[in-house]
Image 1: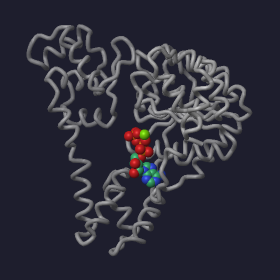
Image 2: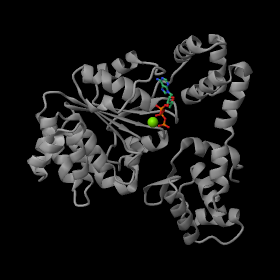
Image 3: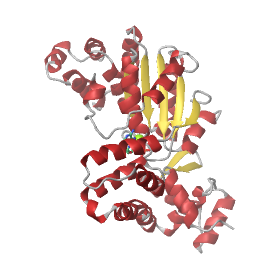
Length: 376
Ligand SMILES: Nc1ncnc2c1ncn2[C@@H]1O[C@H](COP(=O)(O)OP(=O)(O)OP(=O)(O)O)[C@@H](O)[C@H]1O
Ligand SMILES: [Mg+2]
């Protein structure tokens, strides 16, 4: 199926079949039909979902759909539709296209090329006149006819919490609500706070809809696997102890550990300490956060500083007073509104509801909290 075709085999991938089974077992037991997973950035959520969970689901007889809302954060609907369409067999897809008014002859022709049907659907859905509400209904109707249940993975699901997607979120919830026994959903994301808002707030469409839990992180077994594989190619081998030490030093972040391995392989003669120092310098120098920070206007820095400490009511009289105080000149609603607009335009801040803002990247928020003195 198409899911696998987009992924190249990766010998460095550490498989997690037990974890995949645990999630699927819970669905099979019908204990729940939706789960929410969160973990900090770069901890291996996406890799697990795509390389372990979805293939395991397919083996158990599920249709599998994956969508990453971050890639389509301004309009998630079409990307959901094409993910669902990808899960369908070609004849189901053809039926959807026919319903959408795409001449079957044209589709038959395009279906001869690999990916032709999907390509045609993709084009159809992204056409300016395409109505993704109608398309979603048709794709779901076809899915309802399938014998197999569906596992839908929504990565970066926090995008759904954005105020501008409220309508879509409601439509999605309604569609999933009536199909709980046939469509299982995993919501994943890196912002725990935003995901919590989604599932814990009574006014949100997904209120109480999924249990939210931390994603189990990669640990010593991952390190052992990676070191063993590396030692097969390295002239200077590393011990497991050295590997564990490095992993710890890199805050147990798999992505950074892989970067260390790469560096070490290229400069083995320099030793592992040198490779570690180099990796740290490139990933923790805070360079990127600092660059992002210094590029901001003073008002933006203050506003985001307030948001980082949970003071979300920036426009209130008290908020403007704080802003005036910190900025050293009179701040009006216009000052804060413009700062928030700029922060949103740069995808630094998300608006959840009127007057309610969140910093997109938890790590950046943490960095800001540590950097700026607590508000007095
Ligand atoms: N199971 C694994 N085996 C080997 N390497 C892994 C594994 N999981 C993650 N990694 C490494 O960590 C990197 C980051 O993983 P991934 O993109 O899945 O993280 P994430 O939690 O989805 O991050 P983000 O929140 O930024 O999307 C991968 O590119 C890969 O190098
Ligand atoms: Mg990811």
